[in-house]
Image (tube, rainbow, N blue to C red):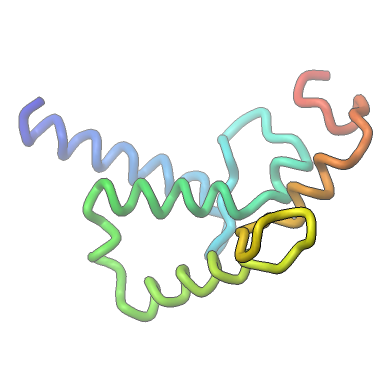
Length: 110
């Protein structure tokens, strides 16, 4: 892949990530077909965005404050829970949705 193709890929992926952004630290998992439960999840999607920014070498373009805020946000998921190893990162909304009985209301395809 040449540098022109990489730049196109980088631009397209940045555009896609921005289209998923609702507000700071709040991203949808996809543009279509997202369930209410999917909209409530946060940790995994933020990690995905950060990983993409890092791979695309965009992370370093963020201000130190923006990087620090994002790191602090991710670290806010590091909580103590007896059911998980010490210092686990846990999205409470994921646990709540996982423990709910599967119903038509939370199904992706209705």
